[in-house]
Image (cartoon, rainbow, N blue to C red; front, side, top):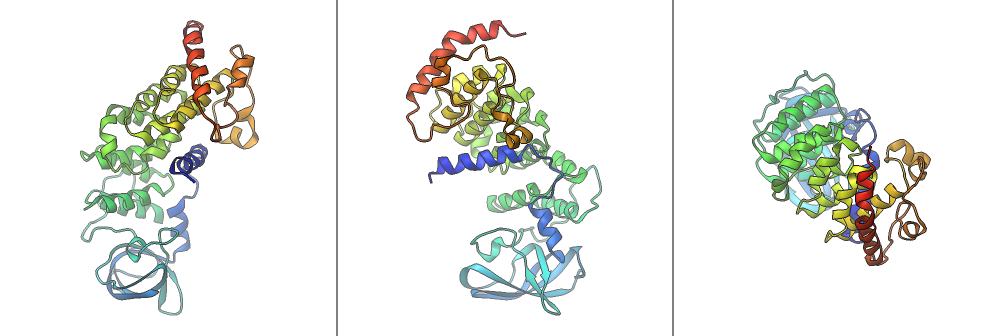
Length: 365
């Protein structure tokens, strides 16, 4: 499968998933529920031999469970990636499950093959949970969010930034996470600012799209974790002017995501932006543009979780005055090109817009 095809499948999933409420259980929430202990600390001693990992963890802070600050925990883990190395000095936020008496099993924070150093969140040693939030932490997930956000403010490299931000954005919505995102949004570090923007955007605060649109030139050079899928998932027609500006980005994936959002919104106001995207150099972006124009002509509703699941997203919601046999021939309202040459579709929809665009604008209420 090509990178473009894989990315499109991910974007489709994220687009549908983004319509759900962020109060549902998220990946880090589930991990916290499974864990018998969640702690911040460092490896006092340990070694990996092949796939077998054993280590002694020295606890500095306890977020959940019976391990008290100053105590140690003997833990093991079976890595999918073989190595032979010492582990002393690894420091961060760990998820542990009880094993035998006095023993613990590490619950890795990722799925798949990865080294030991990616099995936990790399909280910088000496960082403290001091970031400002409008609400005090109540749940274990809230405390984890504060730890990760505080660590983000003192991150030391972009890998650490990416891992901490991914963890924070993997926590479900609460008053605490919203406060943390608002604080990060005010950061003078653009990478941190856009982590905050991503969190707020994923909770349907489309006002933060102005931050993305106004600083669009910064984004290609940033490690803006979570921003692109968050833009993909926008389904609010009021976001159209921002999405149109974002669609002019030189960042191919960000442009593609804005095109996807405009495609699934496909109101009258999206049409000028979709028409411009017909000339994009990215095939996936062009296909979203064709699809959005097709869905407007066929008067399909804006996509949301409910109508995607019940099939209503593919049912016309009223009259279709712009539909003709010719638009039907070149319509992608209910499908994809599936590898076909897009040239005849692009030629048709460019001509259609040139002939029809002004009439549609003149008929606006």
